[in-house]
Amino acid sequence: MEKEKLHRFFAGTTSIQEGMDIRAWMEASEENKRIFYKERKLFDALMVHDDQTTNNCISTKRIPKIIRQWLKIASVIILTLTINYLYQKYKSENEVIAMNTVSVPAGQRTNITLPDGTNVWLNARTTLQYPVTFSQKQRTVFLKGEAYFDVTKKKKTPFIVRTDKYDIEVLGTQFDVDAYPDQTAFETTLMKGSVKVTSQHFPEQTITLKPHHKAYVKDGQLAVTKVNDFTPYRWKEGLICFKDEPFQT
Image (cartoon, rainbow, N blue to C red; front, side):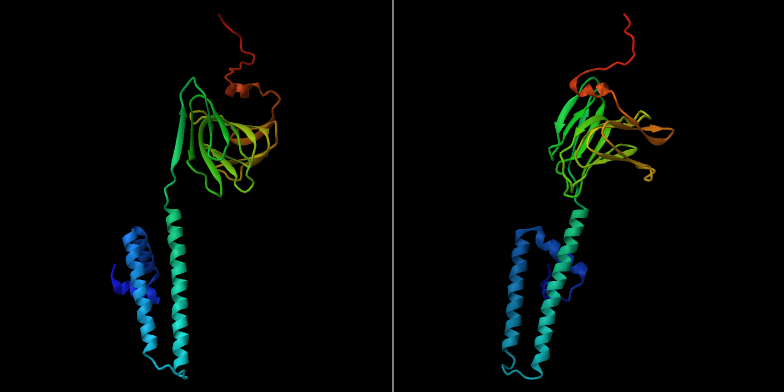
């Protein structure tokens, strides 16, 4: 890094882009940090020496110079804060989120615990993708297939399940989602708490479920019906349920 550019940065005369470049260069290695602070000390020493060579008597001509020095220091502080904000914003927007992916083959089921403590049962032929660490704003997972969620309650951090067509948003609840990508059917059944179901393609299609109710698709629209029999949702216990299906030998 050129010393002249560093000194212009300390003096507050660099552009915002130059300041961001200097900030990124400084953060790249410990050696760069050492050079940065070394040049900063040298720059400060030169500033002090320049002040000492002037007349010690305060005159009407010196007062504007003092003001200029304070304005220069203030501009350096403001520029540094601006660069730091833009650098952190750029870093967060371009940060790659590490994801975990769990896939369950046909004929099997599995139970996992998410980073926030949420318990999830995955049915056969189901894939769940979730971040290694949830953000502070929301907890988003991606589901293909069927899963039963027992969500850890966090009022300020909503839990969102994204399927290929619909989003389910909750705060803390127990519910089942049936959304296999190779099937046209979609169902969300609420056992406890509250969930909001929203169409990804038609955001105006949104409903809020009450416990013991199910959201499903009818004629391309979201519909709601009451659930009286929860036996079909005991698949997570390893039970296969049949209704009005005769056994043949």
